[in-house]
Length: 484
Image 1 (cartoon, rainbow, N blue to C red):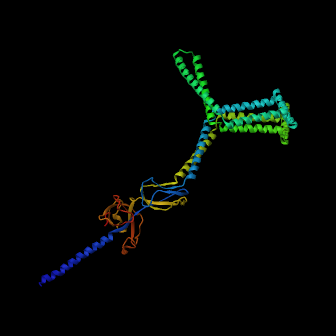
Image 2 (image 1 turned 45 degrees about the vertical axis):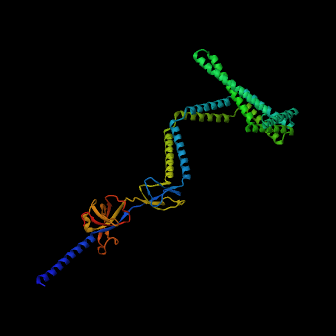
């Protein structure tokens, strides 16, 4: 083999080893400069602000929902009733405030004026004493009470018993007639009367309509026109009454009238039995008490009012006049202010109660996916207890940790090239934020020889949303800003 050929072989080997070493070093440098991470998202745990039992769950895990969609409902019957009552109280307080601000109505003022006049008349009556006719009435009441007592003590007269017996028999006859109802002949007569009255009323109405036309044309006097109208009205009323009588004849005696007939018979029978059996001791004692009351009233009428009664009457007149004066002056500023504040407080309570009712319906705060249901049907929740977890599948980001030496070559808004497991092509991203404080390299993201070096967390978002990228997918950053 020639010498030149033998010398060329080592040179080629050296060059190949050198190129291979350069390629290996570059590969290792590229691997060291690549950053790994996992796409993350921030789920939201939705909770109830009030205590309640779960009545309905309207979504399932994995379901996509729009913002405002009702997710879970809690029982709200007691709370709705309380809110309605609170709102009613708020309306009442508002009405009272308006009444205080507007002042008393004219009819209230007139009523108070009448009260003052009545009290003044009573005072004048007390001052001037009783009139002769009042004394005569009091004496008549005494005579009546004494006569009743004498009747009870000595017993009723025979003619009184006979009259009571006759009244009882008459009431019994009316009750039997009401229970029996009208006979076929009476029903036929009632029908005939109704038809006759209806015909007369119809003819009278036609005459009244014709008289109106003649009166408007000036061919009939006002008196004749009014007479025709009155006749039509009277005959129409008679037709209505005849119709009611015919209806009653067809349907029989109404239950209310039967009850009244029975009650009248029972009263008449009780009156007869009372007279027939004589007075009871308690009735005599009651009559004696009534006589004493009547005699005492006569004595007071004859003696006149006492000074303390006149003083009390003067006091009542003064109070009524003060109330009338207050009504004329209207409500004071502090009263109006207090009424308005009370109405505002009641309105706030009603608003709070309505908000509590609204809190029993949990809605989606954003477009997203229901990741997990944390409660079951019928479960009793306490305030702040998580109900479900949801997230926005498009609101994801990638967090990587950049070595301190490369931090100066990266800035917010810088371009990022990302390789995502499962996607054939790299995707573009942008630096969203850079941590302001360094930390140690996480062991699950960097090579063992890089542990212990200070790194800074960098948050990256995709330039364009991609439905293929999900939270939890691993990714590798090939280039970020001017690094490597």
